[in-house]
Image (cartoon, rainbow, N blue to C red; front, side):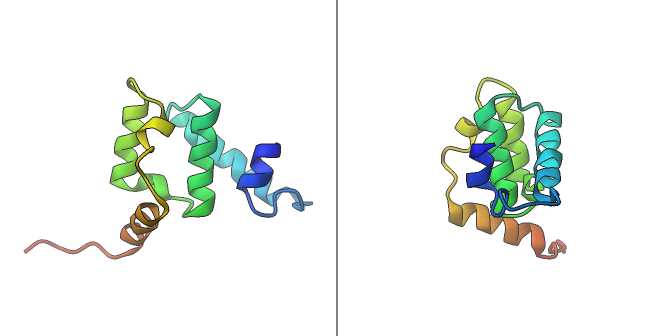
Length: 101
């Protein structure tokens, strides 16, 4: 819980457990993706909380999640990502797709 307090803004002050339910849903999603390592689960939750709840639908993160199931951890698969890249992924998810002519 101490780790989540640092990851999820307002987690400690959440008297109605809204944030706790949100984190539980994210943990369930991470587990459904095959993540089991504690550090991988924390990273998955942190990315969704800090950037966008559906950031893991971005094709690049989908690819990395699949790689994490093979020989790498999710933390390892995401080690080269920075804040700007993750923010770009959110913008790409939010922008309408361009149709190819």
